[in-house]
Length: 233
Image 1 (cartoon, rainbow, N blue to C red):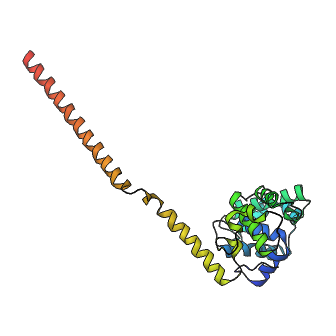
Image 2 (cartoon, rainbow, N blue to C red):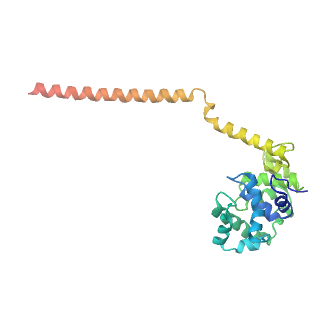
Image 3 (cartoon, helix red, strand yellow):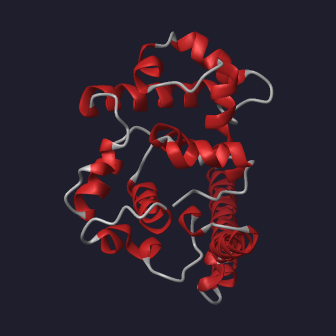
């Protein structure tokens, strides 16, 4: 089974046969188009002149690696911080998995264990871990017991809600349409309380009236004080 992202064939080939490249692409898939994120591992290899290992990236000079990421076109919108995350990812793989990225999922006994392992990687949160578990299961056939449950809604068959479901132009369009629906729903969230805006406006007007009333009372008190002084004279 192979990865079929909307990137050039050589980039897909690298993602399919190099577990480290796939992890790096998934890590970089934030705040940039997915085409940029999943092309980056191949572009990184071209800039280095070879496909890097986890050990190499773990020991790479941080400033030099950031400079490689920053070469135009940059491998990410935030090249310096993402270079640091890729290095941290590589260092963990070396320390915990002997430099073999495939062991992150290769010997996971269950879907729950796989999700936990992925979630512990630098740059991977709970949701990204679920999406990656779904991607492994749906596109690479990595399916330990309970993998769909561990992936949550992203593991359900027939869905088009994440990068795990992208295998051609049609699925890419459906996933993007789904994400646009989510964004539209999020933008409309404040309008879920009918009359909320009017009520807030009424509260503002009421507060303004109270201020005016308080100002009037102050003026009245000041006038009373002046009259009292006139009488005493």
